[in-house]
Image 1 (cartoon, rainbow, N blue to C red):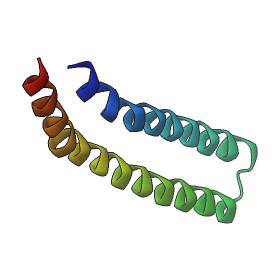
Image 2: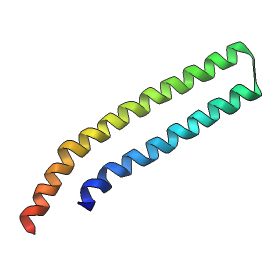
Image 3: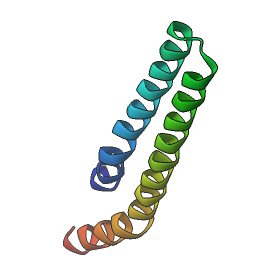
Length: 79
């Protein structure tokens, strides 16, 4: 059981933390520099990063569903 959770969590937890840090950076940059052009650039940068993280999280979900299931079946054979 631990192997199935560990494999997905290795990817999932850093992605969530990176997304939270990106959101905090976006907030701080908006508060520091209120020019409209810079806000648009920062929002675009955060959106692109969020899309990338979403793709990585989807891949992590597929790993959980397919690879972790097979690892669990292999472990059950040896138990």
